Structures are given as C-alpha cells and as structure tokens.
Image (cartoon, rainbow, N blue to C red; front, top):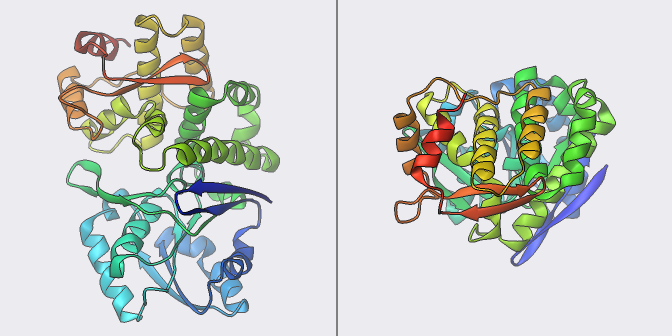
Length: 358
C-alpha cells in the first residue's frame, strides 16, 4: 500500500493506493476520527462485486452502514438522481456528520460527491473509486458535478473528500473497454507533466493490459501524484489546473456529438491526438512526439483518428465548452512530451483543418 497526501486550502486528505485497501476502509475512517453511522452510495453492478465485503468490513469496525443503490449508467448523473438520493438520505436519517462513501466509477463519484456537497450544505465525503478512470482522475481534486441535458458536468461544485481509497484489486474485474477508458487519462497525465512516466507507459503497456498487480499500483500511484501536484498548486482551476484538460476540448465535443456513445477515454484519446497535431502545426511540438503519442494511444487499444462526424457539429459543440472565454476556445497544447501550455489563440481555420485530418 502507498499513500499520497493531497494538499489543498485549509488542509488536505490522504489517498491510499494498493491491493486490498478496501478491506481496511474502517481503520482508515477511524484514523480520520469518523465513527458511527455512514452511507454507502453505489450502483447495482458494483454492489454485487464489492458491496457485501465492504459492509462486512465496516461493520466489523463498528460502523452502522446504510446502502443507497442507483442504477448503472451515465444517465444517472443528473439532478433527478440527486433528488432521489436526498430523499433516501433523509429516510435513513443522515445528519451533517454522516459520511457518504462513494463506491464505484466516475458516475457514482460525481453524483455522490455532488450530493455530499449540497445535502444539508455539505456532509463528509469519502471516495472509493473502483475503475481506473476514477482512481487516477475523477476521485482526485474535488470536482463534483451532474450533467444537464447534453452538457456534461454543467451543475457542480468544488468539494474535497476526506479521503480516497483506490483498491487496485478492483481493476481486475473491469471489462477491457473500461480499462482502456482509464488508460487515456493515465496517458494524458504523463503527456502533460512527466516525460519519464510517458516512457514507462511506452515500455510497459502490455504488462498494464495483462493486469500485472505491481504495474497497476505503479500507474495509479504515478497518475495520482501528477494530479495531486497540479491540484495543490491550483485547487479551484484558475490557472495551472487547466493543463489537466489536455485532450478534453475536442474530446468533450466528440462525446457530445456522438450522443455519449463514444466513451470518455476514447474521446479524450482522439482529442489528445488532435491537440498534438495542432501543437505541431503551430510550431510547438516535434512531429516525432506526435508519433510517440499516437503510438502509445494505439498500444493501449484506444482510437487516434477523428470519427466521421460533421466538422461543423464538433466546432459548435466546442463553443459550448465551459472553458470558452469571450468566444475563444481554450486549448491545452504540448511543447514536448511532459510539458503543456494553455492558449486561447488557436486559429479556427487550424482547428477545422486538424478535425478534417484522418
């Protein structure tokens, strides 16, 4: 087991990473001074896999556990689902000191986090991410949100958890598509911040895909370290933290135009390649680094090419992005592998040229 402490304003919180850490959740909660009643929010799929074992472990440590279950799927990340959870929290008599434990992937983490941030003006939140995407990205940093219509994460807050427990054993139950979904964010972190880790991914992708236990722990640890360092410098996403959006400007637009049929990681992979090509055409990034990025994305089994969508539809979706400033689309570009820069000055004609490139 490895521990990382995320430093944020007013304190910070620990992230525990490694196999078997879920079974130690009660001990970690007690170390934080949490006791008594708690509420686990999860979906039906994750509940079948880990719900009973987690509840037994928590009960053995003296906790009284209520489990609130939501159906699986992105469509549950909504104000309607949040409203149902408010009612259920009231029914189990959750108080302002009652922690919510978010057990699941990114949807559960976002939904339960949003509910924790807003129920009775905020109750304690503990993230128990069970997917690679959630362990390396969405559980770290305090962004919680629900979707509104076709707009992702449109209603939300910054709300830091008390603790994150990333049990890498849970990654072994992931479908291959979900593992790839998370690998996109792992690659992103290395591309923007850590060239040595990027080289590690190039050399070890087959071991990652074979679910090698030591390698899984290493990629989660390195990815969380990257994100924790960025969040510590810019908790509220006012500057440096923008680099974490590498690949997301075009990626979110691709997701939206697909009606969310394209998975987040696939869309981010497509967006990273497009942003790298823009970087190259603007004279920032060497072409060999574009090729390295495409190669590692394809090694992970992720798409590198733009789908056959209307360029106009994609550019219109980009204009609805939360990062647009005075009508200008904000891009994260690469100067080299491991070194990113944020700019609002990408010519619209260049964006369209790259979107047309297959």
